[in-house]
Each structure stands twice: as C-alpha cells, then as structure tokens.
Amino acid sequence: MEIETLQQIWRHFVDTGELDSRMQPVVAESWRKCQRYGLNPLGGKGKQADAAVFRSILAENKDLLDTALPIMQSVYEIVERSHFLLVVTDSVGYVLEAIGDTAVQEMSQDLRFQKGALWNDLEVGSNAIGVALDYDTAIQMVGPEHYCTYHHNWTCSAAPIHGIDGEVIGCLDLSGDAQEAHLHTLGLVVAAAFSIETMLIRLHSAQLMRGALDGIDGSIVLLNDHFHPIWANRAAVRFLGLPLTGLEALDFQEIMPDLDWSQIQQWDRGGRYFTNDTRLVIGGSTHYCSASIAPTLDASNRTFTVSLKKQEHLIDSVNKVSGNRANYTFDSIYAKDPLMKKTILLAQKYARYDGSVLIEGESGTGKELFAQAIHNESNRADGPFVAVNCASLPRDLIESELFGYEKGAFTGALKEGNPGKFELANHGTLFLDEIGEMPLEFQAKLLRAVETLQIRRLGGSQEKKLDVRVIAATNRNLRLEAEQGRFRQDLYYRLNVLKLNIPPLRERPQDIVYCAQEFLSRFNRRYPDQHREMSEGFLHALEGYNWPGNVRELQNSIERTFYASGGDTLTTEDFCYVMGTGTPREPEPPLASDERNNLLRALRSAHGKVDDAACSMGVSRATFYRMCKRWDVEPKAIRK
Image (cartoon, rainbow, N blue to C red; front, side, top):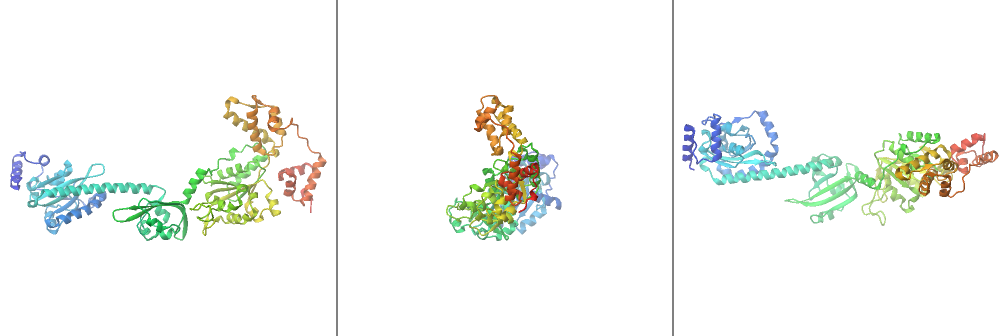
C-alpha cells in the first residue's frame, strides 16, 4: 500500500480503534496490544539501559554478537550508500550493535534508536524488531505501519535469529528512509539472519568438539602446513609446558626430530602416519610418546592433526594386557609355623621402604609370592609389577629385553623401537627371578641400572631416569657365588640391601599339615560334589616326607591325590601311590656322633663361616644354628 493510504488507516485506528482488513495480520495484532497497554502513539523513543546492566547483556550474548558482526559488516558494504542503519538485538530487544553512516546515525539518535536501547513493541510501539521477536516472523514495516508517529518516516526490515535449539535469541534489522523501502531489503535481512544461524550452529559444533578434545587425556595439536601449532587442547598445553599463545613459535620438525616430516608433507589427503615410540624434545627435556599424524584440508590451506600420548599411557596399556600386576598379598601366604610368621613380619617391614630386596630360598618356597606381597603392601601397589625370569632370557637378547631398543638397533627389531622391562616397571616393581643365572658379562650393566635407576636403550643415545624398585630372588647362596667369582660382588651388595630368607617347608613342620588342609579346602570348594577329607595316616605320611620341592610340591601332591583318590578320605595308600614311595616311616634321627661330626667337618672346611658351612650341608643358616645348638657346637670356636 502507498504511504498515504497507510497514514489514513493509522489515523482511523487511533481515532476509532477500528482496524482496516488490509493491514498485515501480525501488525494489526501488535497495534491492538499497544492500544490495550495504553501506549501513546505520539511517542516512540527508546529507553537506554543502565551501563552495568548493558555490560552483562553484552556478555550473555557474546557468541551471537561475535558471529553476527562479520556478517553485518558484509551486508552493510552492500547498502552503505543507501543511508540505512543495520542493527542486531538480543531476544528481549536490546540493541547490541548498530552500523550506519553519520547521517543515519544522527537520525536514529533522535529516536534513541542506538546501541544499548530497548526496542520492543511495549517500549516504543509496534516496529519490525518487536514484531519479529514477538511473533517469530520476518517482516517489513513501512512508515505509518509503525504504531508511534516518531517512526513514520522509517522503513524497517527485520528477521528473527534462532539458536541451536530453535528458540529466538535475537533479531537482525535494517532501517532507513521510508521512501527507500524495497522488498529486496527484507530478502537481504532474511538471508543474513540465516547465515548468522548457520554460523552459530558451526560455532556450537566447534565448541562441542573443543570441549570433547579438552576433556580427553591425549594431546591434540593442529599444525599449519609449516608444522607450527595453530591450536592445541588442554592436555597438549600441559604436555608441552607452554601457554596456548606460546605454542605458535614451536616448529614440530625440530621438537620431534625422529619423524620423516618430508614424507608426512607429501602424503595425500586421508593418509595417516603412526608411531608408538618417538621422542619429543622441548624445554631441555626429552619425552617419549606415541604419535599419530593425519593431514586435513580446510577452505584455504592444508593442516595436520597431531595426536600425542605419553609413553607412560602406552606402557600402562601394555602392562594391563601383559598382566604385569601383582595378584598376591601377605594374606595369600599360608603360615602357621613361627619361623614362617617371623619371615612374613620381616617382609611386611621391608614393604615400607624402597630399597632393593634380595630373596633367597629353595625352589618352591614362594619367592615370587613374597615379592608380589611386598609390592602390594608398598606405596607402589597401584603401579606395575613386572616379573623377569633371568634364566630364560637368551644371552644375545638380555640387554634389549631389560633396557629396550631404538628403531633399527639390530636386525629383526621393531621399526618403532621397543621399551624394555625396566621401562615397563616404571613407578612400580621389577622382579628379577633367578638372578643367580644372569650372565656374568651383563651384570656390570645391570649394576649401573640398579644403582642409578637410569637406562639407555640399545642403539640409543639418551638416558631415561626411572622410578623402579628392584626385588631379586635366587635359589642359590648368592654370597658364596660372589666369593667364588660366579657373581659380581658389587652387584650382590647392591641387591642385598634388604635380605629375606624363606625357610624350606621341612624346617617349618607346622606348615605342612596347615598348608595341605588349605589346599584341600580349595579343591573341595571347586568340586563340592567330590568332597575329600584327610585321614590320620595321610597326615602322618605328609609329615614324614622331606618335601624337596617345598610348598609347590605339596600343593601339586594334594591336587594329584585329590584327583586319584577313589574315596571320600585320603589315605596313606593314596599318598604312597601318588608319590611313588613305599610305606612311609617315621624319619630316623641321625646318630649324635654322626651329625656332630658333620657339623664340625663343615665348619672346618668353611673356615668357620656359617653361611658356607650351611650351604655345604644343604640346610639354611637358621637350621644350621639349631643343629649346632642341639649338639653343643660353637661356630665361633672354629677358626681357620
């Protein structure tokens, strides 16, 4: 309609309250609302918000404003010479920003149509911004379609802006001289509002993605095509030890020197480079990590996404998969004999310290059981427990197995390199079983590693500082081995900080029946329909046997007897059948003169050294002293 016609319709409504049917329905509804609220049609000037209030409004609408401004600038460049004013408001109608030339800015100031002003229907009468916000519709209003006379010289085209949930969060408006009204103006505003909505969705997706990336443990770094960071998540900022603004100076070609960056740069889109063992050198420190690098393309150039993970995380995963965990505690050790209980108390005391432990005992006495229990009662209980059987390591692979190797260190090595047992045990315990079988030529390198807790991988040039507790075990008399030149004395003394001797089963007779009953109870629980008991004769047979294989042999014997027995009670005959022996007899005590002579002979041969004399007789130090006490032999009286 012509402006003159709209003026007549407006005058008729103001005078009579009657609406012309030719009016836009939403405009007509807005006029009725203004009339109901007693709004003065001769007014129409905006109300300026308090400065502090407006600052909070701007803060709440930061994402909207940051997204809208670049688009508004582009739109304004199109209409710059038309003297139009481009504004964006929040969902209530506060003007967040206004862009226009000097002439239109002066016109808008008369209406207080400016930044910080409240511009809705109930404040300034029916207008395009208020209608767009109230009725969630795009609209163009010309001259007298505005409720208040102050606006009759204006034309306004407005479109609501929706957030990601579809709710109206603001409005974009283009206002100018009513004589310059054009339908295309509304189309331009609608397109711009849609662009703002699209960018808000992208911003929200980017924020979600960044939030997700910031929430993961792995380090993510985005590099430009010159391999300098342009973004990093929080984990990467912590890992690299620099603020986000300081990362731009890093050249990843320099701080990750082991990678072939020329090859990475030449890969086609979608290619991916991965290594589970590489160095990152920054701030004078060297970090070992796994790295994944994937090239990506954005609208203008090529970027690279680098995923880094400290090797500790990889090692944790390897330890979990490999079962490098201690499963036994001191409660797992069956003990009733006072001698064994005393040994357990000493081991519990050792668990409180970090010194190296040397465990000596015959095969089958439970040396690894004690090592695991010490680990689980220490402050390293949450760390790995890595067990190594030194007797089973091939001589030519001992160094690489314990210390690891760098890529290309030897033929057949993994191309990425590989951590050794010492690294796998970092922040935990390394258990070196059968340490007496360690080749003499390798013991010097092992000594240095145990002393300094620093290792150098085979083929590497960097030393790694570790936090490892070493527990060693042997069924030999390691001191005698060292004195006879079969084991390095300096390594022996380094390992023998805390000494633990596990007595054989024959020296703790109260444990024979006790352990047997515990083992039988375990099988009874596993096979409740085949419940077994032990006869007196069977118990007598257990006590009369020497048990050279110690607790391991006892456990296996109980299991075999359980399976082989045909009745509910285990008998002497069952024992003899399983053990392959004749009818068990009470062990005959040695003649006094024979045992005493053997003691004296052993002491003289060992020049009075009790450990050596006990070893020559095949008994422990404690047993040897008991025998000496029984036959009134004083070891100190024997001299060379």
